[in-house]
Image (cartoon, rainbow, N blue to C red; front, top):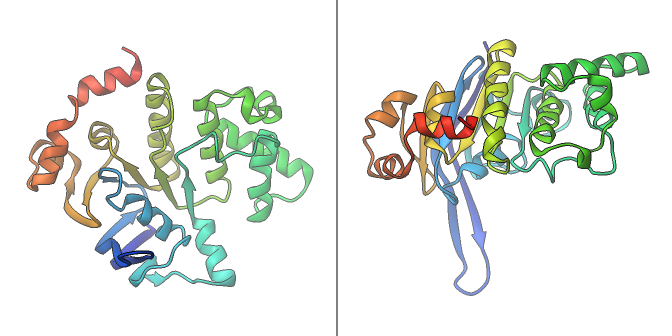
Amino acid sequence: MSTLEFRNVFKRYRVRGKGAHDLLAVNDVSFALESGKTVALVGQSGSGKSTIAKLLLQLERPTSGQILLDGKPVGRHGNALRDYRHRVQMVFQDPFASLNPYHSVAHHLARPLKLHGRASTRTELEAGVARLLERVRLTPTDEFAQKHPHELSGGQRQRVAIARALAPAPTMLIADEPVSMLDVSIRLGVLNLLADLQREENLGVLYITHDLATARHFSDEILVMYRGQIVERGPADDVILDPQHEYTKLLAAAAPNPELRLKQLSGA
């Protein structure tokens, strides 16, 4: 069992210019993500969700507090940082921007396999690329491997991005609004894929979203974020069906019926 932990994390940004001030983007946030579990981080734009993703990926450093993997503080340099990034991977929001249009699918998947020591020879790389494409349900694998991003649909691009994140064999996956840029008709398929991979690979998944309906359906636990703080947390059904914080009540009231929302996503 692997655990990724946020412990009393603060993140302040200095806003410069006229009326310079400090912006507290993350305010004393604590939570834990365990392998085999999905935790949804829910909130509106500007609530601090994406800042948490950047902190978890070590793209930003906390002003104070700790990020721990299996009880040990995350290393910031050299082998320690490489090992952390090997085990914690990201699926970005925009599959159109996260893939280089000049390179084939095979290149996008072979590169992390080589960088993380998962394959070295041409035969190993080809086999590794094929396995990754199979895991994200892109078959025939030899055909998809030769395609370029512009030859794929939005959903297929996001599946390639997920495959790339799986290449280092991570234990934790950070999915930042992974379907918000996709057509409604294909969102459910990508979310179901993430749910299947979470079970099959025993991944810990942090699902960052503003959609309460999918958060309830695909998550074990929901954290509600407002102005940099976690204002409510608990089992998914409890948070959605019996919200306690006023902000959660507003989100729940504004959300469509979960069953209806999922039918809309599936095109039913």
